[in-house]
Each structure stands twice: as C-alpha cells, then as structure tokens.
Image 1 (tube, one colour):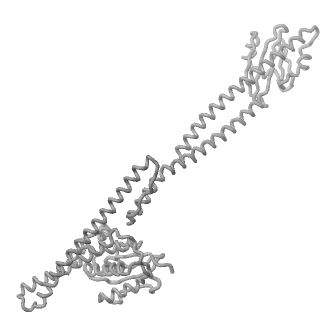
Image 2 (cartoon, rainbow, N blue to C red):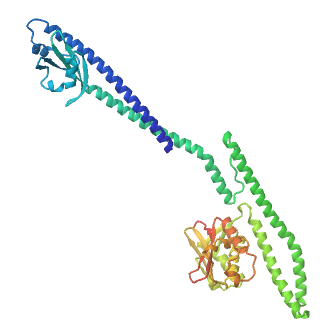
Image 3 (cartoon, rainbow, N blue to C red):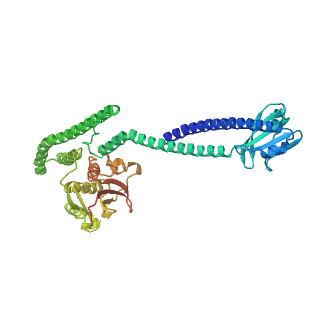
Length: 443
C-alpha cells in the first residue's frame, strides 16, 4: 500500500510539475506576445500624434489610455514622462534602455509593489523618443496559483487512489496466504478435516491442490500410526493376559519357591505391572491422537472429581484445597479428565516422593488443577520436555519408581483436547507444581 502510494505520488509530482511548467511557459508567452503587439500599436499612435506640429510629448502621454490597463513611460532626450505618478524612470532597467536606445524593441519582467509586471520598450525613431509600456501580470499570477492548487489537489487524490488500490491489491494478494495460515493453525490444533476451498484462480490451483494433498497425507499418516499403536496394544494384551495368569498361578504357590525363584517372580510381577500400565497408556494415547472432538461432553465438577480420585487412590483428603463444586464445573469427558488427574498424582508419587497439596481453583473463566510435590523440582529447560512421550526428568530419575514416561503426555493431550493446557512450574514450598487448565462452564 505504501509502495503504491509513493509511486502514485512520484508520478503525480512529475506530471503536476511538468504540466504547471508547460502551462506557465505557454501562458507567459501568450501574454508577452499580446503585450508586445499592443505596445507596438500604442507606440504607433504616439508617433502619429507627435508628428503633428506643436504637439507636446507630455500632453500626448497624458491622453494615452492603453486597453490592457498598462502604464506608459516615455523618454524624450533626458526628459521622462509617465501616465502615472507611481511609475517612472526608476522602473526602466539600464539594460532595457540600452536595447531600446540602439533601435531595437525589448522586454523584461519586473517585480513591482503591486505584483509582477512585464515592461515592453519600443523605439519611435520618427519622433526621437523611447516608448515603454508596463503591463501588470497579477491576473496571470492568480491563474497560475489556481492551476497549482488544482494540480496539487489532483496529485493528492491520485496518491490516495494509489494507496487505496495498493491496499486492495495487497489484501487480495495476501488473502490466499491468510487462508493457508488459518487452515494450518486449525490443523495444528487437531482439526485434520480442514481443507482449503477450491479456487478458479490458475495461479492458486496448484497451491490449493498441493496443500490439501499434504493434509490428506498427514491425516492418513496420523490415523495409520494411531491405528498401528492401538492394534499393537490390543494384540499384546492377549499374550500379556496369559503371562499375567501364569505369574498369578506361580505367585499362589510362592511358599514352595526357593528364595532366588521368589526374587525372580517379584521382578517379573513388577515388570508385568509396568508393561500393563504402558499398554493402557498407549491405548489411551491412540484414542486421543487424531480423534475428533467428542460430542458427548458433560458438565464435570473438577473439585468433586479430584476428591473422588484422591479417595480411590487412598490419598489423604486433606491434600485438597479447592473452590466449591459449582465454581469449578467444566464441560468435558469425565473419564479422560479423571485419568489426567490420576496421572498427575501418580507422577508425584513415582518421581517426587508424593503430592504435598492439590489445588482446584477457578481463575478468569478457567478451572485450574495443580499438584505440588516434594521432589527436587524440574529444571526450567526440561519443563516443556517432560510432557513429551517417553520423557522423564533426569533429576527425578535417580529417586523415582519405574515408569514409561507417558502419563504427563496423556495429561497434555487431554488438556489440549478440552481447549486447555498443561505446564510445569516451581511449587511455592519447593519441588514442582504440575498444572492442568480447562475452560470453565458459564456461571
């Protein structure tokens, strides 16, 4: 837009300047030619009257009345005569006197107290006098000023039109990019059904087709990966169930095992429990990945939900510090939210010595669930990485229980699916604070 405005302004300035200079030159030439012709005519009249015997120069000058309102100055020898008291020999430059004195006509432009004027000098050889006529150019100056104002207004209008055209052209050129950016944002938010609308613009057909093909391939890849994870998890559940059953049979006869066999059995039980948890987490992530938003969301009180999770997990109910149930109601999938809260508590238990406080609060239309732990905290550079899949904090790993590193990833995915977020910060009393936010229902 700025470029179009500047371009229009430059073109307008060039055109206006050229037009004004040409018009000024033309009008001045026309005016000068007219004044010279009139001056020669008036000089002939003066010469004719002076040819009459007994006629005085002063009397003839007083009787002259040029049609253009000019003032007359006549030089006869060393005497000067003028038709006006305001005009005299002082208005006749020496250069013009020399030209007229040599028998030639001449002109010169002057700046008088009344404005610009044109002085024309003509020799009258028959009478031995020099005739000068001073014609005002005030009217021509006003015409040129009016022309300059009109041309300047035209330049400003052209500049404004250029800016408007540039803005329109810029918006039209950027509209496809805005559509692509909006579609990419929605796709990044999980709306994999988003596509660019068809277009008849030959310059954009290839871009639209390529973008939509890319999104189709991306959606197919995500769906295929999610289906693969789900299929693998399902297929592993059957042999896992058989192994778990066999281990349970061995565990029932633990008293008959030797101490070394008993230790091996305990190790297998722990690893099977970890394996089962990992499969459950993988299935949960497979259901979250690429799944469309749920239409079966129901009002859920986060305070009541956290209270139930604490009770079911055998946690101390005094850990909860919450707003009333009605103030913390959100709309969402209760099972998914319950799993996310349970993962936050399990994360504190596994990696940070257990939770020290659980807060449920409503702030600015958002319900916030925070779990403080008694661990060493999470370094600033790792606070985003811990929500990645199979990621674990290096400082917590030294004192933590075995885990797959999928619990916090499920928390982040659940928060994103509900229009919220999950993050990690430092707890006020030391340790780490893991928070989950979900938009609250209107009160």
